[in-house]
Length: 491
Image 1 (tube, rainbow, N blue to C red):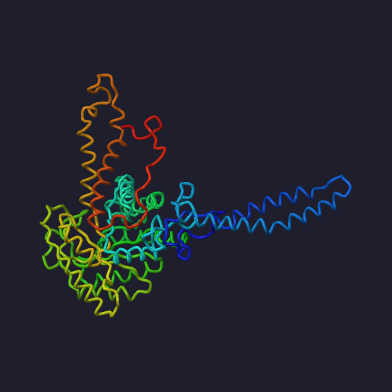
Image 2 (tube, rainbow, N blue to C red):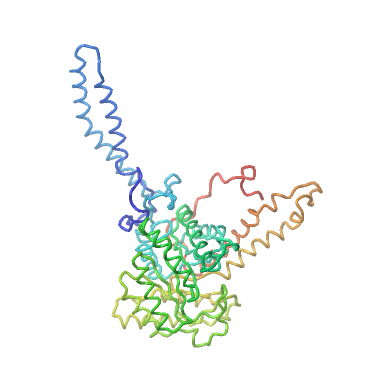
């Protein structure tokens, strides 16, 4: 039975937190099956007969069958209840995993260690709030990985399932443009919007299959990239009209180069629009040093690398006035984009701790960590500083530089290992007529890149206290993985 509910209608998202729920049969399906059998029996019994007294006999049989219908349906209902109880102790089956873009059925499943509303797949609205609140309370941060291809997305999902953890998948404007194809015109950020939307649909199609919660996000958007932001919001609004939730979980506005008042004013304007579709906002306060994706802050003055508690409260106060607002703050506490040797980045996580105390005092709230902070530019940071930042309410840490290297290094190591088989289509150390197709097949080097990325992300999950937070345990080995003769990985 096809549900008429939106895929993530907010009223349908609540699920028990005691297990990773498997979906039960559609309500009433067992009863309907029993009823159909009963109806067939009645129809057969009441069919016209030439025998004397057939009419009277059929009426008696009909009455007898109808008398038992209540008992049959009651028994079916009991079986249904037993099946539901059993389902709650098992994982979502392959048959029940849905394709969110192609169905309106609500998402299914929850996790033993997370709030019950958090489900596998892309999380938005109150599900996202619950996940980030859990991260703040338990002191872990979710890795947010910049992706530029379906291969890097799949590596992130695989790494998250291995770590038994949620993950954030995000696109920068440049990465989104690359996802769309470099030959596509990018006037008014057209290609960047198209690529981000295409990547979002890929994530939505795959995330629930891997069985982990995924926050779907876009990264830095400076003032000159506001056409990109506008295009993404339009995509979210259209998606919301159909499915009752935004296409993305959240978006980032990076107006840190603008005056603080202008930064806040523009963020509030967009927050008012995003709150109507349950989409979250990440804003940047202060400047993250270094260079990333064409944004170069290498010459930023030192005082701009450290946010002040008063500024953080100013942002918090302004955005909190927006009804249904959900936001995070990327405050500066010495962060620097790029790659540096450990110890060369001088973080001051105490800024975050002082800001939390200041906001709590000013608002009179009971939460010791009222602000949800985001950590940019963490490469080269000391592990102790990363862990301290998590303890002060950092719930998201961006990962880009290190995973870029890991992806490349996987390909590089594959090339080094198989160099003698990658010089020509035919001819290798085994003989001049031996073919090399299975070695230069793109899947071989790309899988090596994925494996290298997964290995690096395992360390990220560990550093951020984000391992085994779902409660699912290790994943089962994949079955029926195709071999070379059936189009699978050749080498």
